[in-house]
Length: 401
Ligand SMILES: [Zn+2]
Ligand SMILES: [Zn+2]
Image (cartoon, rainbow, N blue to C red):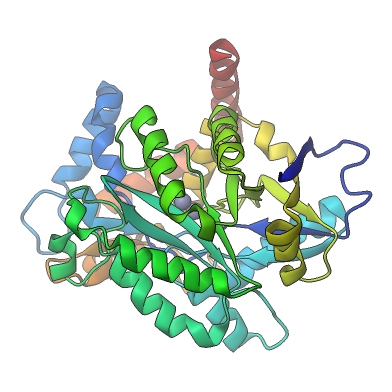
C-alpha cells in the first residue's frame, strides 16, 4: 500500500528529516492557456454578464464578428528562468532544503529546452502537462523527466492524441478541450495506452494524474468521477501518482486522495502556479536528485506533502492575484512581453496566433485596452482594496464552512 504524510508548513518537524523539496507542476510564459471558460461566466450574475458581453462586442483587428472566447488564449507572466527562481527561492528560503523544480507548460517541453539551451548551469527535468481527450471530457497528465532525445517523437504523438476534435484537427491546432464533441471512435485510446506505457518504460520518468476531481469538461462531478475511474481502469498501470493540487480547494483534493486510495496509487503535490506566487503545496524528499524522488514515488510508493502558508489564504483571492499577475505590467520582462496585451493571443481562422498588441498595433492603442488597463490599475493596484477583497473571500469561506 502507498504511504503518505500531509502536514502544514510551520510544524516543528516540517523539513527536519527531509533532504530536498520538489515543486511539481507549474506554468511559465511558454504555456498557452485557453480563455474559453470566460464565455461561460455569464451565468454568474448581472455584472459579470455585462462585462463578458461588452468584451464579446470589442473589435479585434479587422474582425467584424463577435469575439469567441475559445479563440482567445493567454500566456502566464513568468519566463522559464524567473519561474524556476520563484520556485527555488521559496524552497531554499522557507524550508532551507535543496530544490528540484519540474516546470510543466501545457502540451510543450519548451521551458526546459529554453533553460538548457540558454543557461548552461541549469539542469531541470523535461516535463509537460499533457491535455488528453478521454470519452466526453479530457484529463491533464503531468509528464515529468523524460529523456531529451525522446521529446521530438513523444511530442509529435502526444500532439496527435490531444487534437481531440475534427474541427480543430482540420485547422491544425490543439483544441485544449475548448470543443467538447469528441465521438468515441476518435478517442485514440489504443495510441494513448501505447504512449503511456512507453513513457512509463523510462525508469526516471513520472506520470501524474493531475487534479482528477476537477471536472474540466463540465460533465458534472459524479460523471467526472466515474470517467476518472474508467480512465484508471484502462490506463492506471502506466500512471504513477495522483495529484493534490495547490490551486484547488481541499474538498476537491480530498476526493483526489480517495481516488488515489481506490486505485492503489501514491499522491504527490503539484502547485499549478500560473501567476507569480510559488507553489502552495510541495513534496518533501530524501533524494539528492529528481530521479531519486521519482524512485521514492514509483518504487517505494511513499510521499510526504507540505501545505505552504498561502494554501490557507482564500482561494478566490489567490486566483484574483494570479489574474492581476497576468494583467499587470512587467517593465523588465526578459522575453519582452511587458504589457498584458503582449500576453493575450487571438487564434485566426487558419489556426495562427497573434497578440493583441500586434492586432492593435501597439500595446495601448486599442480603446478597450486603454479603458481596461486604467480600470485595473486603479482598482487592483491599491492594497487596501486588495485586502478588502481578501477579507470578503475569507468571510465567504467561513460562512460556507
Ligand atoms: Zn491542469
Ligand atoms: Zn496546470
